[in-house]
Amino acid sequence: MSESTKFHPALVVTNIENTIPITLDMDTSKYLSWVSLFITHCQAYQVIDHILPKSTDDSSSSTTTLVTHVPTVNTETWDRLHAIVLQWIYGTISLDMLDNFLKPDQTDLQAWECIKSIFEDNKNSRAVHLRHKFSNIRLDNYPNVSAYCQVMCQKSYHQDLKKLADQLANVGPALEDDHIVLQLITGFNDNYDHVGSQLSYTKPLPTFFEARSTLIMEEARKMQQATN
Image 1 (cartoon, helix red, strand yellow):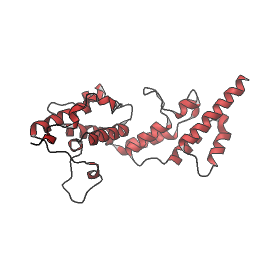
Image 2 (cartoon, one colour; image 1 turned 120 degrees about the vertical axis):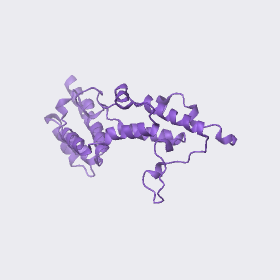
Image 3 (tube, one colour; image 1 turned 60 degrees about the horizontal axis):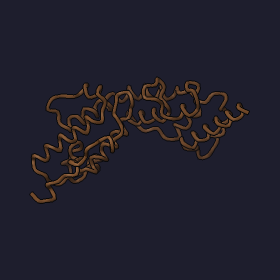
Image 4 (cartoon, one colour; image 1 turned 90 degrees about the vertical axis):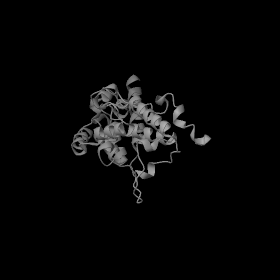
């Protein structure tokens, strides 16, 4: 074995939370962000094959394009890498999730596929539920404009628009930004009707963050008026 294969970059990772600061939980709906960070991390440390094995089909699929080259290592190192990736998975999910699918002699690929199935099964029913919840978000349900637009506490009953949009992207076609902005406007109360009209007649429609900025500025203006 050559000198270049005696050392593997994945062996130097001591704290997975430095690169994957998300703890995946059934209630947080951070699956897409977690997957993106985890795949990027595995690509960077050359262990992507452990969760996304290379396809043997020459007609490459979208999954195959994510796979990077892994240096040749001996069996002992390869087994150790399997254990390391498994530790990364275990270290970035909640204890409740861990209890649900932890099994003896589980491989990193089996753990990855199990998590995938948890979040990607029953897409249709989840999409219907989430879209109903998304269409019923109202500003009156929030203490202020910032809370309406920003990410709410994970354990809060209400979910904000962007967070719900991320959940919907996980179970089906992603919502266009225009759809999110229009739903944001739909949820306004009477105090912000004029802002809603201003935003809805803007062409092209402002982005979610532009609409959010306008709404927050209007709230600040109203608060200043009330103080004066």
